[in-house]
Length: 132
Image (cartoon, rainbow, N blue to C red; front, side, top):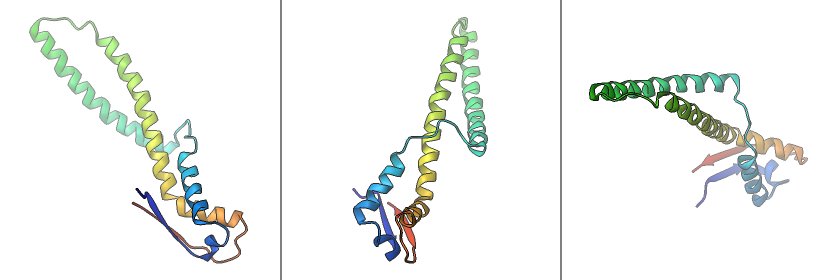
């Protein structure tokens, strides 16, 4: 199944074959992920985490109220917090991966243009990447 279509001018095709472009796109998408978030990404992630925490806390409060009504003690509260912190680490990693791939896709036309220039293209360069 095709994932994208690249429409480009001679400035690209003079120095890159179709297969070169396909390989380049997959190399960019498969490059190692950053280990940290940018300031804006941290802000967005914190906002999303706060929303998730609110929902988790509401669910936890309802669960604890139900347990109290049933007369059972909440001995696993601390353990649940630790599990949720570990879950956030996984969520952060997934968030970093998703955001990075989206950024790379958004910038792919620019990256292909830069690669054509790096390879010595002297012609006009226009690139459009259509993600399917």
